Figure 1 (tube, rainbow, N blue to C red):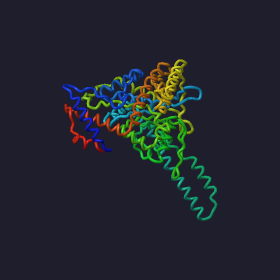
Figure 2: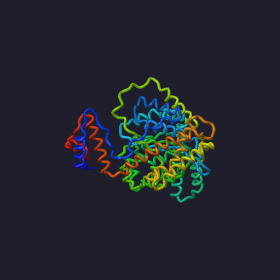
Figure 3: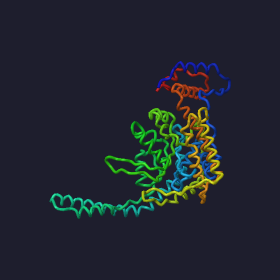
Figure 4: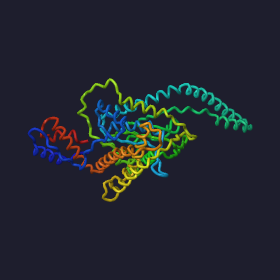
Length: 470
C-alpha cells in the first residue's frame, strides 16, 4: 500500500506548528475511544491473580496478555471435568477461546511456557507411565497385522483356484473385530495444527486439547482457512467450542465423527493479520459467529519499557497455580464408548443465576439500534455464555466439591468478560475503519515515535518514503 504524501506534508506542518520547548503535547487520537481500560486483574481468583502478578513482574508484558495465558491454561486443564448449566436445556462446556491482538515480540511464548509448565510436565509423565502398555500394544498389533495380511493372502490364493472361501472370509471378519486397540495417551497442547489434524487427534488420541499459539496459524495462517475450506473449518471450530458433534467425511481415507470432545484456544496474532483474514473471509469470520466466541484483548505494547531483570530464585505463587493445574489434570476422565468424555454438570446458586440473568438482559438491551453494542452484536450475544464458562472455571480452580457456582464467581466473571467485550468493540471498530484512515493512524504513530526518539520537532518526508511504502 502507498501512503498519500500530501498527508505526510500536513503532519509535518502540524508538528512544526506545535513545536514545543521541553515536552510534547498529548496528541489527539484519530480514532475515538481507542485507548483500552486497565485489565481488571483483581477480579481473578486470588491464586490465579497472584500467579499472573508474579509472572508479570519478571516478563513485563501487557497485563491482559498474561491473564489470557493463565486463563487458557486453566481452561485446558479443567475443561474435561464439567459443563455449566445456565438454564433448563442450556448447558455448555467450560472451554474458552481467547485472542490477544499483539505485535511480534510481546512474549506470548514465554508466558505460555510459565503457565503451561505443569501441563507439559503432566503430559510427559503420562507418556512415561504408558510406555510398557504402548510397547505391548505395538507387539500385539504387529502380530495381528501379520495374521490379517496372511489370511487375506490365503483368500486371494483360494479365489485364484476358484475354490470356496466362505470360511476364510468369516475368519477375516472375526480377526478384524479382534484388532488390538491402541492405548490413548493424553496429549493436550498443540501449536499450529490444521483444524482437520486437530479434530482427528481429538478422536484418535485424546478428547481434550488446546491450541496455544503465538502465531495463530490454525486460524490465520493455515491453508485450510482460505478459499472453500474456510467455511468448513470455521464450522468445525464453532462446533468444538459448543461441545457438539461434527462428522468429517473423507473420500480416500477413514471418515470419523468428533463428539464429546473439548477444545481450548489461546491465540496471539498481529492486527494486520486479523484485518487481512477478515477481508479474505468475505464476512464469514463474523457471519458464522466464529469471532464471536473469542474473548478478545488488544493491549498496549510494553516494548521499549522492559528493562532487564534477573529471574526470581523461586516462583511461590506460580508454583501454587501449577500444583492446582496438576490436581485438575489428575482427575482423568473415564471415556465413553465413543471415546469422548462424560463431564459433570455445574449449576448456579439462586443468587448467582440471578446475577447471570441480569447481565444477560443488560447486554441484550444494548443490542438494539442505537445501543452500545449494536455494532458488535455477534460478540455481545456470546458474552453471557462466556460468563458462565469462566465462572465454572473459577469454581473448579477453587477446588469446590459442590456443583453450585457461587455468586461471587459469577460477579468476577462478569467483570472480566465485560472488559473483553469492550476490547472486542474497540478492536472491531478499528477493523471496520477505512484503510486510508488506518494508514494515517500508522503514519501519525511513526512520526511521533521518531520525533520523540530523536528529540526533534520535524521529520523530512524523504525519510518517510522508504519506511512507509510497502
